[in-house]
Length: 441
Image (cartoon, rainbow, N blue to C red; front, side, top):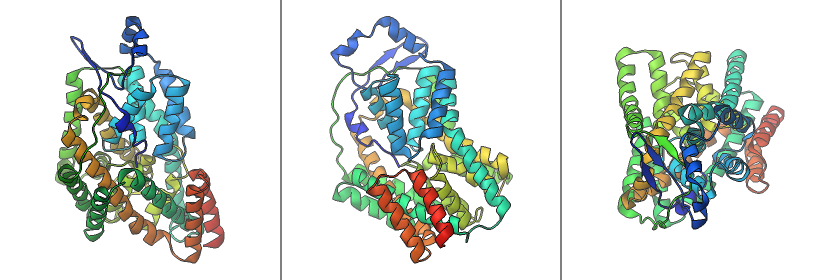
């Protein structure tokens, strides 16, 4: 799911300064007070104002401590980069979050990639991704190896507790997104329509089709609010137009070419990469929404046992960092290609690669695209469809597999109340649910 939905409404028109070999792109809205920034400072920013080591260490610390999901991650980022380090202004940060909300993939990871790109170039983007992703990926890989060593854990009490906790976490995500993304009757109707399509047509293509139909409905039926005019705060990115276009071309070529190569060669590694690349490229709404697509691509195709899938998803709630690192767990336990460390690595890189390519390719052109009324109406419909996909996933497979009786329902209800009313940390609740499952289930 994606947080900071108000970011798009607070963004303003960006400036563009063209240089002979590259373009300097800025986001946000500047005031007259911002004119105090000197030319020398702007030149320093163009050359990437941060150290690669600094970027890596800051994001590694965030990767070790950022519990709570994408909305919480964006809050941690605001505290670290806007309030504490002042790497960018409030409005520049809001504009950047708005951009990442409109792209498929994990919003918080994309924001981190963009900040790393601005501070230390392409290597900074890579360092930010590794630092923020590696801790949770290693933890989930270790969990996967434990599941493989212990054999069938689908009826173990602590695994049933994790499944019950997943019911509460996804239900909380559905409610949170519905309040912000579907506040009116038309968007709520689009959400319910997407849910119906996915539930009645259990196919990987149904998920993609539901989002396409939601976008068309938004384009034809919704009205996008007007955006305020203004200048831009500093968030300079030095990127060549050719490099940006090459990144977008690479994104499209992999999306279209990987399925063909995988089918033509029958290679298990290519098939695994294709599955997870497609998930990262086509999922709008962030980590929780990747669940139905990954479930359709792995469980429904027989690559992963349903119980193991949900056990891993429950474990993913207990670790810091992006939820997309769930791919490392799935790659490690798959039966349809390379598994173990190789499978985990391939799945992890494949699911995040679309996000990196899109950030590099779209960032220079975002300010113009986001102001097009038709584009904004379509994206409003897509976001409403995301709520429907999440609601469908809440029913199947999360609720149908997670609630096995009265005791599991009690655990799920307790976790839900603690999340909604007491704002307890997700990682603590998941660990508590596993302990309660061990005792009660």
